[in-house]
Image (cartoon, rainbow, N blue to C red; front, side, top):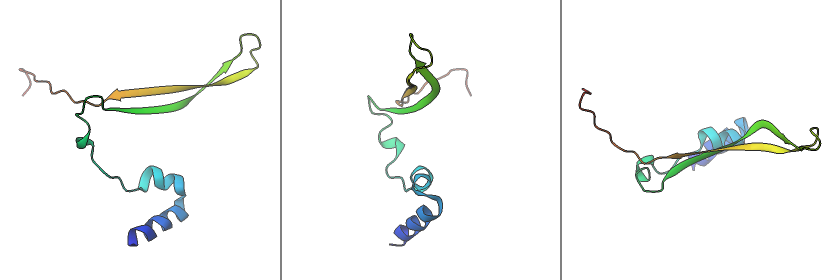
Length: 83
């Protein structure tokens, strides 16, 4: 119950967006899924580049999205010369 009051106070003070990004409790662990085949992390962001029409350069069609996918399967590498 005390955690809920703390969360409400944090949200009231800093806003819901800040709470969800920085303060919310996290459940689970990376070690539970990082070695599963097909596991990946993905991120997307909207770039500050505008798509314009070929016919009219002043007509903005949209903005670009950049996507990044990272394979999270860890492969152990062994090195003979490493100490």
